[in-house]
Amino acid sequence: MAVDMTMPVLIVDDYKTMLRIVRNLLLQLGFTNIDEAMDGNDAYALLKQKKYGLVMSDWNMQPVTGLDLLKMVRSDETTKSTPFIMVTAESKTENVVAAKGAGVNNYIIKPFNLNVLKSKISAVLGPLP
Image (tube, rainbow, N blue to C red; front, side, top):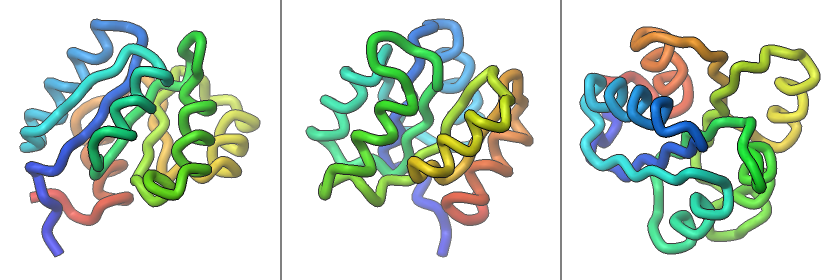
């Protein structure tokens, strides 16, 4: 089944430049419905208002980290099945293990390019057009 490129996608990062980079890459891939949040609290509030087809969150944010957001998403009946990709500059094994244990669908290490993003999203949602 083809990926719905109009589905809502939520990107979460406390760094405006990273939000812009990820948004531009998603637009290049063909996604058209992209929302942004600057921290886990704002992201969770958006997730309670709208059904997202994908969440891409930075790990390292304050006061609510990407891992905390992931745990909140997975423990909530209405959001627990939302596909979630963690984006981080940390490639430490214990971080990957913690994210997997919390139910992350995939993991992207910064810096990354369009091809890496496409392959990581495809692994979660299916082949992109």
